[in-house]
Length: 632
Image (tube, rainbow, N blue to C red; front, side, top):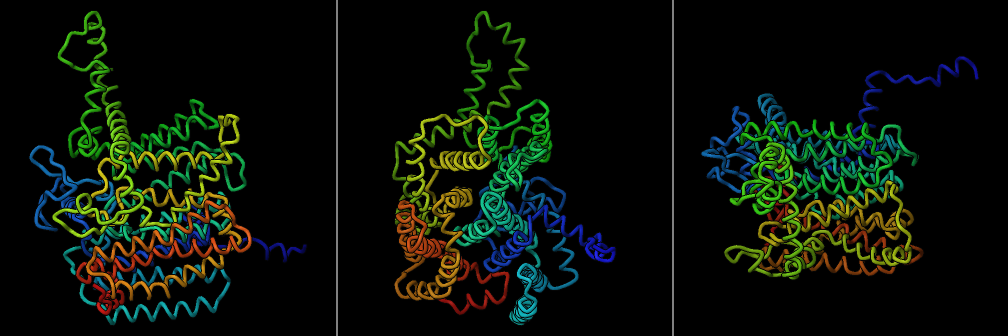
């Protein structure tokens, strides 16, 4: 090779381009991960409504308003009619908000919106941001496919959509920037759920399976519905997928060999849980237990140095949570939400470790008095675990005592007005499988379990990375179900939002099934065409059926519930058969595509027709479509 050829082959990227490439690699993995991020932002923006969907969000908006004025407690009623809305907790004479992590991290977004509002009309600014995300998606896909014509044509289309939205734009209420900031923050974090899912599944299997599985996650679950709602649900989805991804990376790299610094990714997994405690401490505690049970007994290295690194990372991630608790309630380890959940477990622990019980302890009394400071600290740390154990036990007992409730929560909602609704409201809640019928594929795990049951050998202590992540996902799914099942079903869930992590983890477990993985690999074209056809053609049929047959919102919801189960049951039977070759595989791809698209139709109609929230759509073109579409 000549010197000239050698110089030509040298890397000539500028420092800025190198920084861009490193940023993409760290945050998104590769170009497809970046495309997944922008595509998710665009979809979530389509169904974003700049108003309150549930009353809990008033507390967060008022909390951000107070924080923007230098107050951690709720001060003025900036949103809604009163301060004591659901989600507010009373500490002494003051009211405080929940989810301080979301409130504090939304503050920079609010400051940016305030600055934008001074420079340009806020409605035009939001339209421009969505258009830029769509343009970035077009450019990213064009570069990946090396298709310059696609890039040019797509850019022209984006410019046309921007002009259309500007022409249809109406003024946006500039007094609600705290709500917009919360929505934008949640929407941005939610967009990383598909990114992390794609990165995880791509490393587990292939980029094709990762991309197809991500389509199932985004379109086949209610992720888009809750992405912009100021509640913990979208944040929880991102957190659980992030923990699963970091847990996998702590065991392997892209080549399947042990990484040189597994403790780094183990530390990131625990740090994610610690940071999530700033948002919702009870669920973070459950995630911590599930992570520790899946990780520590199966780790190839549990040396003191490794555990110290993991412990330091977890402790540092808890600093915002501890500082906020100390400032708000006066105790770093006492978030009101955690101890308001249950009171029995903590008393049991206090008694067990020598707390005051009103009786004599006999000859052990001097020893217990001497150890009382240490026992007090132990009680402080064990009390949350006791509360969690009590909740899980209550959940298990409620399943045994009332199996109909878990059935209505997971399988079929129905017109159970006495359980689901208040004041004889309509049955407008879908069960888990009605919200994501693709999860019915999970019955295919029975076949895999039957095969595995014939292997009587004990599993090795150090499990493969895939088995470790599977264990974490299963523990989290079971744990969250037990944690909430005693309080479900209740009204105003729409799609069982309290069990929202079951959707991303459920799709992960579905994609892990060999029959699904092989079908998405070999028959991805029928799957993609079925998704598109169901959305474009089936969507029109759904609109016609709802407009002609549904008498009210409850009937419309129940139609979607039956439609979802009608799409999911054949899919479950196919998965149980376990065939992905030939016509069986193509049929499975079609069934998988239908079950993936049906929830998207529901989400779109919720945003356009069922809950339009006074035509508060962020994009003017979506608002104009909602004005035309009148079904109920």
